[in-house]
Length: 256
Image 1: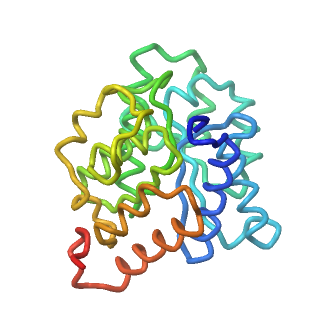
Image 2: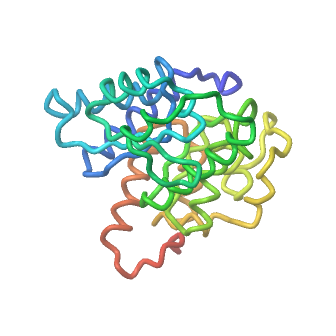
Image 3: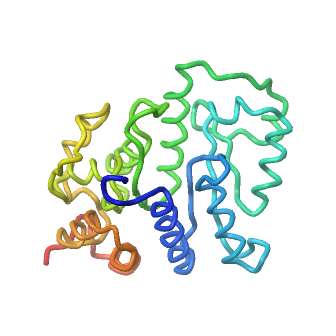
């Protein structure tokens, strides 16, 4: 993002605006973890509180916590998280991708996860999320210092492509999503392009026609290259609207 003249604040502002418009259009939101102060979960909570009636009512946001994230949390930290996220549905995901109730988790011994539990647990959580959501919006994403078998955004997008679930790629903010957009042929390679990271080769068998998001090739290219929310948000909403209303649309990009 620094190369593009952006900061983390630009990414947070983009995420906030996208989430606001999706909620306004009746969507439920799902997000995978990140309980750090100032992280996206905190931002979603703030958005939910402001968007609703002051209590978070009327909006549905689910926050998924992977096994290696919550197994390392003490029981009182779990309680504090449940209390803090009182207007957000908290899902504790097990190593097999199944649910673990808060009560059951509190009876379990907290410990630091083994190294191998990180990629296994994160993949399990992402598979569960993918099976329970209708579409994915991707932007940013790190390509180094990650804990899974590949960058998180890459694995999430790959799972969506494999299951033919709609994907909206906002590559204008750089990061992993920009790399994915390059790999799928939506944007040209640029001077800041990075060497292949684990999993990038798995995405090479897909193209723009596999996004299944209701947008044309030209619209997907515009979405993948734009850092402007005034252009990106209407494209996302247009695709979702088409998917909702066009019963004859088979999922792949429209021919125009």
